[in-house]
Length: 396
Image 1 (cartoon, rainbow, N blue to C red):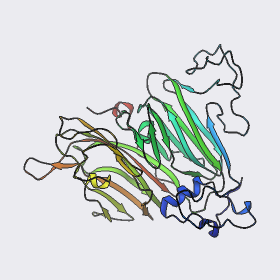
Image 2 (image 1 turned 90 degrees about the vertical axis):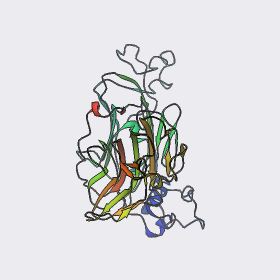
Image 3 (image 1 turned 180 degrees about the vertical axis):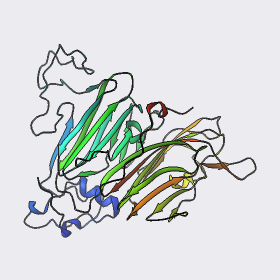
């Protein structure tokens, strides 16, 4: 399937700006130039669902344990195997039903094992990922685009879905949805031109006998100017480095799309006075974009008096900064309607800053883990080494 370029007139069907336009274009399965004799016309209205009725030549595919290749007409073909020595959960439940029933709904990932969740040719766009695992940072997701050797996404599975501290919390946002008991969903559009490969590694010393997942994607043309999705996990103690670095070393043209912080507060009192800063395209000592406070960046005000989860920002754990520490915060901010655009390079930092007893700002020694989400041209700069498992667990 050869990639084609999106016609200008068809682009007008989805006249939203920034990453929002990419989301609507990609999830709407818009057609290639060759699929219609005349380009599709705008519907005359603009809503988040404007692109949904526009028919196209896109082909929907979905990968799960019941169809590991996503191939057409190849789902649900597993045959019960009562002699399997180390089966996945529920593997024997269909022994009396036979092929075509619910024979292989889950994968088993043994200790130290890496399994491939997706390995398909493009062009195409991943539209939805659903995942159920153990909410463990020992489980690592990696995404590789177009045959690259180093991943464009390398994140512990729960943090990728805005679940911090290995502690479940509901998320009800535009691009990430987390439902009870630990159903992890993301709707980030992820275009690929030649190939997409997704792996899941179990670095724990215990087998995972139930990994449930589904990756839905469309085989369709990808616009020439579409960037590739990236996500990177970091963690540090701000006693050894403050401001905390969320992202650095990015080279190329792109758009910053979101931030997730799993913040462990170690000092009683308000912790969120720190400013987030975006250093763009050669900025030196001072950034181009400077926020005014942590709760301001995450869409709050006067602290975080209660948990909230909205389309683009939220704090999902019932933290209370007046209680004895440690206090745990899971904070997300999606730049879907307001992406941070850069041409050459990008660095993102946030200060760990609270109030001292003297009424002055106080530098804090907190533990912060983060996920940065962005789109950019390839090739990308190599990521810092993922911290070893011993350094990923819940802070004390």
